[in-house]
Length: 67
Image (cartoon, rainbow, N blue to C red; front, side, top):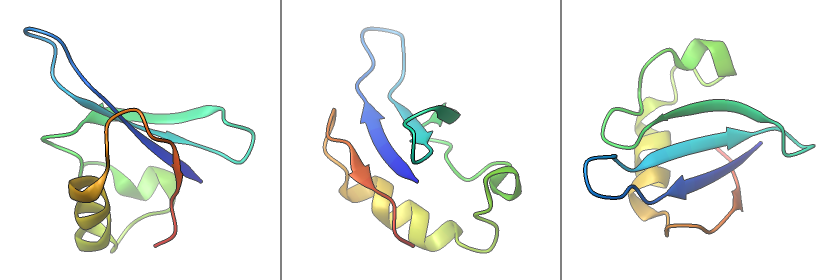
């Protein structure tokens, strides 16, 4: 799974994208509220780790999500 942080403009907030190994979009959520419905993506009980990864992400840089 891969993760990327997308910079919002004006009234549009920053977003997080989760993509699978084929880079198909599987999740798209606001960066300020990322810890909702994580069970849908197989990330339940990993809220703390995911929040730490999101906090350290640079905008526009795709990286492999390893938590």
